[in-house]
Amino acid sequence: MKNLISVIMSTYNEPISMIEKSINSILMQTYPNIQLVLINDNPERIELGNYLTQIANDSAKIKYLANKKNMGLVYSLNCGLRNADGDYIARMDADDISHLDRIEKQVKYLKENDLDIIGSYVRTIDDYDNVLGSIKVPRDHNTIVRLYKYGSCLLHPTWFCKKEVFEQLNGYRNIYACEDYDFITRCIKLGFKFGNIAFPLLDYRIRENGISVSSEAQQKLMMYYISKNRDKILSLNERDFANYLISTEYTRDLKYINRYIISKNKIKKQNQYQYILTLIFNKFFYINLISKMKLNNKSSQRDLV
Image: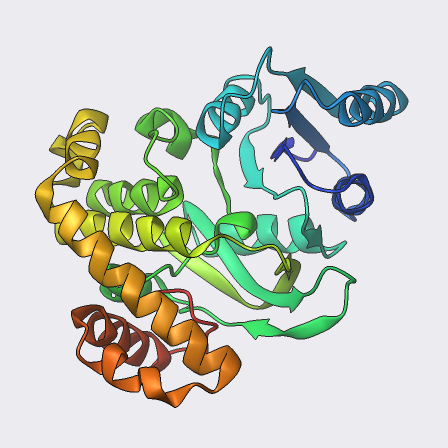
Protein backbone atom coordinates (compact mmCIF):
# COMPACT_ATOMS: atom_id res chain seq x y z
CA MET A 1 0.00 0.00 0.00
CA LYS A 2 1.17 3.54 -0.76
CA ASN A 3 2.41 5.67 2.16
CA LEU A 4 -0.26 7.65 3.98
CA ILE A 5 0.09 11.41 3.49
CA SER A 6 -1.40 13.71 6.15
CA VAL A 7 -2.35 17.18 4.91
CA ILE A 8 -2.59 19.79 7.70
CA MET A 9 -5.12 22.61 7.18
CA SER A 10 -6.24 25.18 9.77
CA THR A 11 -9.33 27.33 9.19
CA TYR A 12 -10.26 30.65 10.74
CA ASN A 13 -11.92 33.50 8.81
CA GLU A 14 -11.78 32.25 5.22
CA PRO A 15 -15.07 32.32 3.25
CA ILE A 16 -16.80 28.94 3.18
CA SER A 17 -16.65 28.96 -0.64
CA MET A 18 -12.84 29.19 -0.55
CA ILE A 19 -12.53 26.54 2.17
CA GLU A 20 -14.71 24.18 0.10
CA LYS A 21 -12.44 24.57 -2.94
CA SER A 22 -9.34 23.98 -0.80
CA ILE A 23 -10.75 20.86 0.83
CA ASN A 24 -12.00 19.43 -2.48
CA SER A 25 -8.60 20.00 -4.07
CA ILE A 26 -7.12 17.65 -1.44
CA LEU A 27 -9.90 15.04 -1.40
CA MET A 28 -9.72 14.76 -5.22
CA GLN A 29 -5.95 14.23 -5.43
CA THR A 30 -4.67 11.63 -7.88
CA TYR A 31 -2.62 10.18 -5.02
CA PRO A 32 -5.09 7.86 -3.27
CA ASN A 33 -3.88 7.44 0.32
CA ILE A 34 -4.50 10.84 1.91
CA GLN A 35 -5.66 12.00 5.33
CA LEU A 36 -6.84 15.61 5.67
CA VAL A 37 -6.32 16.85 9.24
CA LEU A 38 -8.73 19.77 9.48
CA ILE A 39 -8.54 22.20 12.42
CA ASN A 40 -11.28 24.70 13.25
CA ASP A 41 -9.63 27.65 15.04
CA ASN A 42 -12.80 29.76 15.12
CA PRO A 43 -15.33 27.72 17.12
CA GLU A 44 -17.56 30.76 17.70
CA ARG A 45 -18.22 30.92 13.95
CA ILE A 46 -21.25 28.63 13.90
CA GLU A 47 -21.56 28.48 10.11
CA LEU A 48 -17.95 27.30 9.81
CA GLY A 49 -18.35 24.65 12.52
CA ASN A 50 -21.51 23.27 10.92
CA TYR A 51 -19.90 23.10 7.49
CA LEU A 52 -16.69 21.40 8.69
CA THR A 53 -18.62 18.89 10.81
CA GLN A 54 -20.80 17.96 7.86
CA ILE A 55 -17.95 17.57 5.37
CA ALA A 56 -15.94 15.53 7.89
CA ASN A 57 -18.93 13.21 8.40
CA ASP A 58 -19.16 12.76 4.62
CA SER A 59 -15.52 11.74 4.08
CA ALA A 60 -13.50 9.02 5.79
CA LYS A 61 -10.35 10.84 4.65
CA ILE A 62 -10.95 13.76 7.03
CA LYS A 63 -9.88 13.91 10.68
CA TYR A 64 -11.68 16.94 12.15
CA LEU A 65 -10.40 18.82 15.22
CA ALA A 66 -12.07 21.86 16.79
CA ASN A 67 -10.26 24.14 19.22
CA LYS A 68 -12.30 25.15 22.28
CA LYS A 69 -11.42 28.76 21.53
CA ASN A 70 -9.30 30.70 19.03
CA MET A 71 -5.72 29.58 19.69
CA GLY A 72 -3.86 30.90 16.65
CA LEU A 73 -2.17 29.26 13.70
CA VAL A 74 0.89 27.80 15.46
CA TYR A 75 -1.15 26.03 18.15
CA SER A 76 -3.56 24.72 15.51
CA LEU A 77 -0.82 23.41 13.22
CA ASN A 78 0.97 21.70 16.10
CA CYS A 79 -2.34 20.15 17.18
CA GLY A 80 -2.80 18.88 13.63
CA LEU A 81 0.71 17.44 13.60
CA ARG A 82 0.13 15.58 16.86
CA ASN A 83 -2.97 13.99 15.37
CA ALA A 84 -1.51 13.21 11.94
CA ASP A 85 -1.16 9.52 11.16
CA GLY A 86 0.77 9.84 7.91
CA ASP A 87 4.37 8.96 7.09
CA TYR A 88 4.64 12.31 5.32
CA ILE A 89 3.16 15.73 6.09
CA ALA A 90 1.86 18.27 3.58
CA ARG A 91 0.73 21.81 4.36
CA MET A 92 -2.29 23.54 2.93
CA ASP A 93 -3.89 26.93 3.60
CA ALA A 94 -7.67 27.04 3.67
CA ASP A 95 -7.99 29.64 0.90
CA ASP A 96 -5.51 28.09 -1.57
CA ILE A 97 -6.14 25.36 -4.16
CA SER A 98 -3.82 22.40 -4.68
CA HIS A 99 -3.46 21.11 -8.22
CA LEU A 100 -4.93 17.62 -8.37
CA ASP A 101 -1.59 15.89 -9.00
CA ARG A 102 0.30 17.91 -6.37
CA ILE A 103 0.75 15.15 -3.79
CA GLU A 104 1.55 12.47 -6.36
CA LYS A 105 4.31 14.60 -7.85
CA GLN A 106 5.69 15.68 -4.49
CA VAL A 107 5.91 12.12 -3.15
CA LYS A 108 7.76 11.02 -6.27
CA TYR A 109 10.13 14.02 -6.31
CA LEU A 110 11.05 13.81 -2.62
CA LYS A 111 11.77 10.08 -2.77
CA GLU A 112 13.67 10.12 -6.07
CA ASN A 113 15.93 12.97 -4.92
CA ASP A 114 16.39 11.71 -1.34
CA LEU A 115 15.16 14.97 0.21
CA ASP A 116 13.57 15.76 3.58
CA ILE A 117 11.36 18.76 2.81
CA ILE A 118 10.26 20.25 -0.49
CA GLY A 119 7.96 22.87 -1.96
CA SER A 120 7.10 24.06 -5.44
CA TYR A 121 6.43 27.08 -7.60
CA VAL A 122 2.91 28.51 -7.25
CA ARG A 123 0.41 30.23 -9.47
CA THR A 124 -1.11 33.36 -7.87
CA ILE A 125 -4.87 33.98 -7.96
CA ASP A 126 -7.21 36.68 -6.67
CA ASP A 127 -10.40 36.41 -4.61
CA TYR A 128 -12.29 35.34 -7.73
CA ASP A 129 -9.82 32.65 -8.89
CA ASN A 130 -8.44 34.85 -11.66
CA VAL A 131 -4.79 34.04 -12.38
CA LEU A 132 -2.48 36.95 -11.51
CA GLY A 133 0.95 35.46 -12.21
CA SER A 134 3.35 33.04 -10.59
CA ILE A 135 6.01 32.82 -7.91
CA LYS A 136 9.23 30.98 -8.64
CA VAL A 137 11.69 29.99 -5.95
CA PRO A 138 15.22 28.51 -5.90
CA ARG A 139 15.14 24.81 -6.76
CA ASP A 140 18.21 22.98 -5.48
CA HIS A 141 19.35 22.42 -1.90
CA ASN A 142 22.59 24.41 -2.04
CA THR A 143 20.92 27.47 -3.57
CA ILE A 144 18.06 27.37 -1.05
CA VAL A 145 20.50 27.22 1.88
CA ARG A 146 22.64 30.03 0.45
CA LEU A 147 19.73 32.36 -0.26
CA TYR A 148 17.41 31.64 2.65
CA LYS A 149 18.92 34.44 4.72
CA TYR A 150 17.50 36.89 2.17
CA GLY A 151 13.93 35.64 2.09
CA SER A 152 11.53 32.72 1.89
CA CYS A 153 12.72 30.00 -0.48
CA LEU A 154 10.15 27.36 0.49
CA LEU A 155 6.58 28.63 0.24
CA HIS A 156 4.75 27.43 3.34
CA PRO A 157 1.46 26.29 1.70
CA THR A 158 3.46 24.02 -0.66
CA TRP A 159 5.48 22.16 1.98
CA PHE A 160 5.75 18.39 1.74
CA CYS A 161 8.10 16.57 4.09
CA LYS A 162 8.92 13.51 6.12
CA LYS A 163 7.00 13.41 9.38
CA GLU A 164 10.27 12.87 11.27
CA VAL A 165 11.35 16.42 10.36
CA PHE A 166 8.48 17.89 12.40
CA GLU A 167 9.09 15.37 15.16
CA GLN A 168 12.77 16.22 15.47
CA LEU A 169 12.04 19.96 15.62
CA ASN A 170 9.06 19.45 17.97
CA GLY A 171 6.80 21.24 15.52
CA TYR A 172 6.47 24.99 15.09
CA ARG A 173 7.52 27.60 17.62
CA ASN A 174 5.14 30.42 18.53
CA ILE A 175 6.92 33.24 16.72
CA TYR A 176 4.82 36.08 15.38
CA ALA A 177 4.03 35.60 11.67
CA CYS A 178 7.35 33.83 11.06
CA GLU A 179 6.84 30.31 12.36
CA ASP A 180 7.62 28.87 8.91
CA TYR A 181 10.81 30.92 8.43
CA ASP A 182 12.00 29.94 11.90
CA PHE A 183 11.20 26.29 11.17
CA ILE A 184 13.23 26.17 7.95
CA THR A 185 16.10 28.09 9.55
CA ARG A 186 16.27 25.41 12.24
CA CYS A 187 16.05 22.70 9.57
CA ILE A 188 19.07 24.20 7.82
CA LYS A 189 21.11 24.12 11.03
CA LEU A 190 20.15 20.46 11.55
CA GLY A 191 21.27 19.48 8.06
CA PHE A 192 17.98 18.51 6.44
CA LYS A 193 17.88 18.43 2.63
CA PHE A 194 15.61 20.75 0.62
CA GLY A 195 14.25 21.15 -2.87
CA ASN A 196 11.53 22.82 -4.92
CA ILE A 197 9.65 21.40 -7.90
CA ALA A 198 10.13 23.80 -10.80
CA PHE A 199 6.51 24.24 -11.80
CA PRO A 200 3.33 25.34 -9.99
CA LEU A 201 1.50 22.74 -7.92
CA LEU A 202 -0.73 25.14 -6.00
CA ASP A 203 -2.85 28.21 -6.64
CA TYR A 204 -1.78 30.73 -4.00
CA ARG A 205 -4.53 33.21 -3.20
CA ILE A 206 -3.68 36.89 -2.76
CA ARG A 207 -6.72 38.30 -1.02
CA GLU A 208 -7.89 41.89 -1.28
CA ASN A 209 -7.98 42.26 2.50
CA GLY A 210 -4.32 41.25 2.91
CA ILE A 211 -2.24 41.89 5.99
CA SER A 212 -2.14 45.45 7.32
CA VAL A 213 0.90 47.71 7.14
CA SER A 214 1.46 47.16 10.87
CA SER A 215 1.31 43.36 10.55
CA GLU A 216 3.57 43.38 7.49
CA ALA A 217 6.12 45.51 9.33
CA GLN A 218 6.15 43.23 12.37
CA GLN A 219 6.46 40.16 10.16
CA LYS A 220 9.43 41.60 8.26
CA LEU A 221 11.21 42.65 11.44
CA MET A 222 10.81 39.18 12.92
CA MET A 223 12.21 37.67 9.74
CA TYR A 224 15.23 39.98 9.88
CA TYR A 225 15.77 39.05 13.53
CA ILE A 226 15.71 35.34 12.70
CA SER A 227 18.04 35.81 9.75
CA LYS A 228 20.48 37.88 11.80
CA ASN A 229 20.55 35.20 14.51
CA ARG A 230 20.43 32.18 12.19
CA ASP A 231 23.81 30.82 13.34
CA LYS A 232 22.50 30.46 16.91
CA ILE A 233 18.86 29.75 16.05
CA LEU A 234 18.83 26.41 17.89
CA SER A 235 19.88 28.05 21.16
CA LEU A 236 17.19 30.74 20.97
CA ASN A 237 13.83 30.09 22.59
CA GLU A 238 10.42 31.72 22.45
CA ARG A 239 11.34 33.98 25.39
CA ASP A 240 14.23 35.45 23.36
CA PHE A 241 11.81 36.36 20.59
CA ALA A 242 9.34 37.83 23.08
CA ASN A 243 12.12 39.97 24.60
CA TYR A 244 13.04 41.27 21.15
CA LEU A 245 9.44 42.40 20.63
CA ILE A 246 9.64 44.65 23.72
CA SER A 247 13.17 45.91 23.08
CA THR A 248 14.14 49.48 22.17
CA GLU A 249 15.76 48.10 19.00
CA TYR A 250 12.44 46.65 17.86
CA THR A 251 10.50 49.84 18.69
CA ARG A 252 13.00 51.96 16.76
CA ASP A 253 13.09 49.69 13.71
CA LEU A 254 9.30 49.29 13.67
CA LYS A 255 8.96 53.04 13.20
CA TYR A 256 11.41 53.03 10.29
CA ILE A 257 9.97 50.00 8.54
CA ASN A 258 6.42 51.32 8.85
CA ARG A 259 7.54 54.47 7.06
CA TYR A 260 9.25 52.36 4.40
CA ILE A 261 6.17 50.21 3.73
CA ILE A 262 3.78 53.17 3.65
CA SER A 263 6.02 55.06 1.22
CA LYS A 264 6.54 51.99 -0.97
CA ASN A 265 2.80 51.31 -1.16
CA LYS A 266 1.97 54.91 -2.04
CA ILE A 267 4.52 54.92 -4.83
CA LYS A 268 3.47 51.51 -6.15
CA LYS A 269 -0.32 51.95 -5.95
CA GLN A 270 -0.85 55.68 -6.34
CA ASN A 271 2.19 56.84 -8.33
CA GLN A 272 2.91 59.42 -5.62
CA TYR A 273 6.60 59.85 -6.40
CA GLN A 274 7.03 62.65 -3.86
CA TYR A 275 7.53 59.81 -1.37
CA ILE A 276 10.65 58.58 -3.16
CA LEU A 277 13.01 60.50 -0.87
CA THR A 278 11.31 59.08 2.20
CA LEU A 279 11.89 55.66 0.70
CA ILE A 280 15.54 55.88 -0.32
CA PHE A 281 16.66 57.45 2.96
CA ASN A 282 15.19 54.55 4.91
CA LYS A 283 17.59 51.70 5.74
CA PHE A 284 14.94 49.08 5.03
CA PHE A 285 14.87 50.20 1.40
CA TYR A 286 18.41 48.88 1.02
CA ILE A 287 17.81 45.73 3.07
CA ASN A 288 14.87 44.83 0.85
CA LEU A 289 16.70 45.83 -2.33
CA ILE A 290 19.67 43.59 -1.57
CA SER A 291 17.38 40.71 -0.61
CA LYS A 292 15.39 40.91 -3.83
CA MET A 293 18.51 41.27 -5.97
CA LYS A 294 20.00 38.12 -4.44
CA LEU A 295 16.80 36.12 -4.86
CA ASN A 296 16.05 37.40 -8.34
CA ASN A 297 19.45 36.33 -9.59
CA LYS A 298 18.10 32.79 -9.31
CA SER A 299 14.32 33.13 -9.53
CA SER A 300 11.62 35.57 -10.57
CA GLN A 301 9.56 36.34 -7.47
CA ARG A 302 6.71 38.35 -6.11
CA ASP A 303 7.79 40.78 -3.35
CA LEU A 304 8.26 38.16 -0.63
CA VAL A 305 10.93 39.95 1.40
